[in-house]
Image 1 (cartoon, one colour):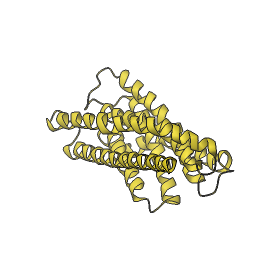
Image 2: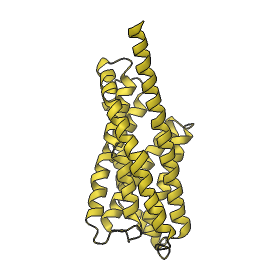
Image 3: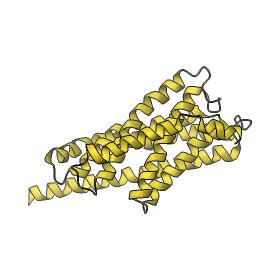
Image 4: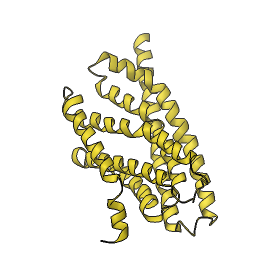
Length: 249
Protein backbone atom coordinates (compact mmCIF):
# COMPACT_ATOMS: atom_id res chain seq x y z
CA UNK A 1 0.00 0.00 0.00
CA UNK A 2 1.57 3.31 -1.12
CA UNK A 3 1.86 6.52 0.89
CA UNK A 4 -0.98 8.32 -0.90
CA UNK A 5 -3.40 5.46 -0.22
CA UNK A 6 -2.42 5.44 3.45
CA UNK A 7 -2.92 9.19 3.61
CA UNK A 8 -6.39 8.86 2.09
CA UNK A 9 -7.39 6.09 4.51
CA UNK A 10 -6.08 8.03 7.53
CA UNK A 11 -8.22 11.08 6.68
CA UNK A 12 -11.47 11.81 8.54
CA UNK A 13 -13.39 11.23 5.30
CA UNK A 14 -14.71 7.74 6.28
CA UNK A 15 -15.83 9.10 9.66
CA UNK A 16 -17.68 12.01 8.05
CA UNK A 17 -19.31 9.66 5.53
CA UNK A 18 -20.47 7.36 8.35
CA UNK A 19 -21.97 10.36 10.14
CA UNK A 20 -23.95 11.40 7.06
CA UNK A 21 -25.08 7.81 6.50
CA UNK A 22 -26.35 7.51 10.09
CA UNK A 23 -28.16 10.85 9.82
CA UNK A 24 -29.73 9.79 6.51
CA UNK A 25 -31.01 6.55 8.04
CA UNK A 26 -32.35 8.36 11.11
CA UNK A 27 -34.16 10.83 8.88
CA UNK A 28 -35.57 8.09 6.65
CA UNK A 29 -36.71 5.67 9.34
CA UNK A 30 -37.48 8.00 12.26
CA UNK A 31 -37.80 11.74 11.49
CA UNK A 32 -39.82 11.32 8.28
CA UNK A 33 -41.34 7.90 8.99
CA UNK A 34 -44.88 9.34 8.79
CA UNK A 35 -44.29 10.84 5.34
CA UNK A 36 -45.34 9.06 2.16
CA UNK A 37 -42.75 6.53 1.05
CA UNK A 38 -42.13 8.41 -2.21
CA UNK A 39 -41.23 11.59 -0.28
CA UNK A 40 -38.97 10.11 2.37
CA UNK A 41 -35.80 9.75 0.24
CA UNK A 42 -35.90 13.41 -0.86
CA UNK A 43 -36.64 14.56 2.69
CA UNK A 44 -33.75 12.47 4.03
CA UNK A 45 -31.48 13.99 1.40
CA UNK A 46 -32.54 17.42 2.63
CA UNK A 47 -31.64 16.37 6.19
CA UNK A 48 -28.03 15.60 5.32
CA UNK A 49 -27.88 18.69 3.12
CA UNK A 50 -28.95 20.79 6.10
CA UNK A 51 -26.21 19.15 8.17
CA UNK A 52 -23.66 20.00 5.48
CA UNK A 53 -24.63 23.28 3.85
CA UNK A 54 -24.66 26.01 6.48
CA UNK A 55 -21.89 24.46 8.65
CA UNK A 56 -19.76 24.14 5.50
CA UNK A 57 -20.18 27.88 4.81
CA UNK A 58 -18.91 28.84 8.27
CA UNK A 59 -16.15 26.23 8.23
CA UNK A 60 -14.96 27.29 4.78
CA UNK A 61 -15.02 30.96 5.77
CA UNK A 62 -12.96 30.21 8.87
CA UNK A 63 -10.52 28.07 6.87
CA UNK A 64 -9.90 30.94 4.45
CA UNK A 65 -9.80 33.63 7.15
CA UNK A 66 -7.12 31.83 9.16
CA UNK A 67 -4.91 31.09 6.15
CA UNK A 68 -1.81 33.24 6.53
CA UNK A 69 -1.37 33.59 2.76
CA UNK A 70 -4.67 32.84 0.98
CA UNK A 71 -4.46 32.74 -2.80
CA UNK A 72 -5.86 30.85 -5.78
CA UNK A 73 -2.84 28.54 -5.77
CA UNK A 74 -1.73 28.54 -2.13
CA UNK A 75 -1.02 25.24 -0.43
CA UNK A 76 -3.97 23.70 1.38
CA UNK A 77 -3.85 24.14 5.14
CA UNK A 78 -4.80 21.20 7.40
CA UNK A 79 -8.09 22.87 8.31
CA UNK A 80 -8.92 23.54 4.66
CA UNK A 81 -8.30 19.86 3.93
CA UNK A 82 -10.64 18.97 6.79
CA UNK A 83 -13.40 21.14 5.32
CA UNK A 84 -12.89 19.55 1.92
CA UNK A 85 -13.22 16.09 3.50
CA UNK A 86 -16.41 17.20 5.23
CA UNK A 87 -17.92 18.21 1.88
CA UNK A 88 -16.55 15.24 -0.05
CA UNK A 89 -18.23 12.89 2.44
CA UNK A 90 -21.56 14.69 1.98
CA UNK A 91 -21.46 14.52 -1.82
CA UNK A 92 -20.49 10.85 -1.70
CA UNK A 93 -23.47 10.11 0.57
CA UNK A 94 -25.91 12.13 -1.52
CA UNK A 95 -24.56 10.46 -4.67
CA UNK A 96 -25.35 7.06 -3.13
CA UNK A 97 -28.84 8.39 -2.39
CA UNK A 98 -29.39 9.35 -6.03
CA UNK A 99 -27.93 6.12 -7.40
CA UNK A 100 -30.32 4.08 -5.22
CA UNK A 101 -33.55 6.10 -5.44
CA UNK A 102 -33.16 8.22 -8.59
CA UNK A 103 -30.72 6.38 -10.91
CA UNK A 104 -32.18 8.08 -14.00
CA UNK A 105 -31.58 11.61 -12.67
CA UNK A 106 -28.44 12.08 -14.73
CA UNK A 107 -28.36 15.83 -14.07
CA UNK A 108 -27.87 15.57 -10.31
CA UNK A 109 -25.70 12.46 -10.56
CA UNK A 110 -23.48 14.26 -13.07
CA UNK A 111 -23.41 17.35 -10.83
CA UNK A 112 -22.27 15.32 -7.83
CA UNK A 113 -19.63 13.44 -9.81
CA UNK A 114 -18.26 16.70 -11.23
CA UNK A 115 -18.22 18.33 -7.78
CA UNK A 116 -16.44 15.33 -6.31
CA UNK A 117 -13.86 15.52 -9.08
CA UNK A 118 -13.07 19.15 -8.18
CA UNK A 119 -12.89 18.51 -4.44
CA UNK A 120 -10.91 15.27 -4.72
CA UNK A 121 -8.31 16.66 -7.12
CA UNK A 122 -7.85 19.72 -4.90
CA UNK A 123 -7.61 17.62 -1.74
CA UNK A 124 -5.77 14.48 -2.84
CA UNK A 125 -4.02 15.23 -6.15
CA UNK A 126 -2.58 18.77 -6.23
CA UNK A 127 -2.86 19.80 -2.53
CA UNK A 128 -3.22 23.42 -3.61
CA UNK A 129 -6.04 25.79 -4.52
CA UNK A 130 -8.37 25.09 -1.60
CA UNK A 131 -8.97 28.81 -1.05
CA UNK A 132 -10.54 29.13 -4.48
CA UNK A 133 -12.54 25.92 -4.12
CA UNK A 134 -13.79 26.89 -0.65
CA UNK A 135 -15.02 30.26 -1.91
CA UNK A 136 -16.99 28.33 -4.53
CA UNK A 137 -18.29 26.08 -1.75
CA UNK A 138 -19.48 29.14 0.19
CA UNK A 139 -21.26 30.52 -2.87
CA UNK A 140 -22.85 27.13 -3.55
CA UNK A 141 -24.03 26.48 0.01
CA UNK A 142 -24.98 29.95 1.27
CA UNK A 143 -28.50 29.32 -0.05
CA UNK A 144 -28.62 25.75 1.31
CA UNK A 145 -30.70 26.39 4.44
CA UNK A 146 -33.39 28.31 2.60
CA UNK A 147 -33.38 25.88 -0.32
CA UNK A 148 -33.78 22.79 1.85
CA UNK A 149 -36.64 24.27 3.89
CA UNK A 150 -38.24 25.39 0.62
CA UNK A 151 -37.81 21.88 -0.83
CA UNK A 152 -39.38 20.23 2.22
CA UNK A 153 -42.28 22.68 2.13
CA UNK A 154 -42.73 22.04 -1.59
CA UNK A 155 -42.94 18.30 -0.99
CA UNK A 156 -45.87 18.69 1.44
CA UNK A 157 -47.63 21.79 0.10
CA UNK A 158 -50.35 19.74 -1.60
CA UNK A 159 -51.57 18.17 1.66
CA UNK A 160 -50.39 20.49 4.47
CA UNK A 161 -51.65 24.09 4.55
CA UNK A 162 -48.72 25.37 6.60
CA UNK A 163 -46.28 23.84 4.10
CA UNK A 164 -48.11 25.57 1.24
CA UNK A 165 -47.96 28.93 3.05
CA UNK A 166 -44.28 28.44 3.90
CA UNK A 167 -43.51 27.53 0.29
CA UNK A 168 -45.26 30.68 -0.99
CA UNK A 169 -43.51 32.82 1.64
CA UNK A 170 -40.01 31.47 0.95
CA UNK A 171 -40.15 31.32 -2.85
CA UNK A 172 -39.55 35.01 -3.72
CA UNK A 173 -36.64 35.65 -1.29
CA UNK A 174 -35.08 32.27 -2.03
CA UNK A 175 -35.30 32.82 -5.79
CA UNK A 176 -33.85 36.33 -5.41
CA UNK A 177 -30.92 35.24 -3.23
CA UNK A 178 -30.19 32.26 -5.46
CA UNK A 179 -30.29 34.47 -8.56
CA UNK A 180 -27.82 36.97 -7.11
CA UNK A 181 -25.38 34.27 -5.92
CA UNK A 182 -25.53 32.01 -8.97
CA UNK A 183 -26.21 34.67 -11.57
CA UNK A 184 -23.70 37.35 -10.52
CA UNK A 185 -21.31 36.47 -7.69
CA UNK A 186 -20.57 32.97 -8.99
CA UNK A 187 -19.77 33.99 -12.58
CA UNK A 188 -17.65 36.90 -11.35
CA UNK A 189 -15.54 34.65 -9.13
CA UNK A 190 -15.11 32.06 -11.88
CA UNK A 191 -13.92 34.88 -14.16
CA UNK A 192 -11.36 35.85 -11.49
CA UNK A 193 -10.20 32.23 -11.32
CA UNK A 194 -9.87 32.00 -15.09
CA UNK A 195 -7.84 35.22 -15.31
CA UNK A 196 -5.48 34.11 -12.54
CA UNK A 197 -4.92 30.53 -13.72
CA UNK A 198 -4.61 31.43 -17.40
CA UNK A 199 -1.78 33.80 -16.47
CA UNK A 200 0.32 30.74 -15.63
CA UNK A 201 0.87 31.83 -12.02
CA UNK A 202 -0.28 28.46 -10.69
CA UNK A 203 1.24 26.14 -13.30
CA UNK A 204 4.05 25.03 -10.97
CA UNK A 205 1.62 23.56 -8.42
CA UNK A 206 -1.70 23.10 -10.27
CA UNK A 207 -1.39 21.47 -13.73
CA UNK A 208 -3.30 23.10 -16.56
CA UNK A 209 -5.60 20.12 -17.06
CA UNK A 210 -6.68 20.43 -13.40
CA UNK A 211 -7.56 24.12 -13.32
CA UNK A 212 -9.13 23.98 -16.78
CA UNK A 213 -11.30 21.13 -15.53
CA UNK A 214 -12.23 23.13 -12.43
CA UNK A 215 -13.27 26.18 -14.43
CA UNK A 216 -15.23 24.08 -16.93
CA UNK A 217 -17.06 22.13 -14.22
CA UNK A 218 -17.97 25.24 -12.23
CA UNK A 219 -19.02 27.18 -15.34
CA UNK A 220 -21.27 24.30 -16.41
CA UNK A 221 -22.77 23.98 -12.92
CA UNK A 222 -23.50 27.71 -12.76
CA UNK A 223 -25.09 27.63 -16.21
CA UNK A 224 -27.40 24.78 -15.17
CA UNK A 225 -28.23 26.63 -11.93
CA UNK A 226 -29.17 29.77 -13.86
CA UNK A 227 -31.41 27.72 -16.15
CA UNK A 228 -33.04 26.05 -13.12
CA UNK A 229 -33.78 29.28 -11.26
CA UNK A 230 -35.01 30.93 -14.46
CA UNK A 231 -37.57 28.15 -14.90
CA UNK A 232 -38.69 28.62 -11.28
CA UNK A 233 -39.19 32.36 -11.82
CA UNK A 234 -41.27 31.61 -14.93
CA UNK A 235 -43.30 29.00 -13.05
CA UNK A 236 -44.00 31.43 -10.19
CA UNK A 237 -45.06 34.14 -12.64
CA UNK A 238 -47.46 31.76 -14.36
CA UNK A 239 -48.96 30.69 -11.03
CA UNK A 240 -49.45 34.34 -10.05
CA UNK A 241 -51.17 35.06 -13.37
CA UNK A 242 -53.50 32.09 -12.91
CA UNK A 243 -54.52 33.39 -9.47
CA UNK A 244 -55.16 36.87 -10.92
CA UNK A 245 -57.27 35.39 -13.73
CA UNK A 246 -59.34 33.39 -11.23
CA UNK A 247 -60.01 36.51 -9.16
CA UNK A 248 -61.01 38.51 -12.24
CA UNK A 249 -63.31 35.76 -13.51
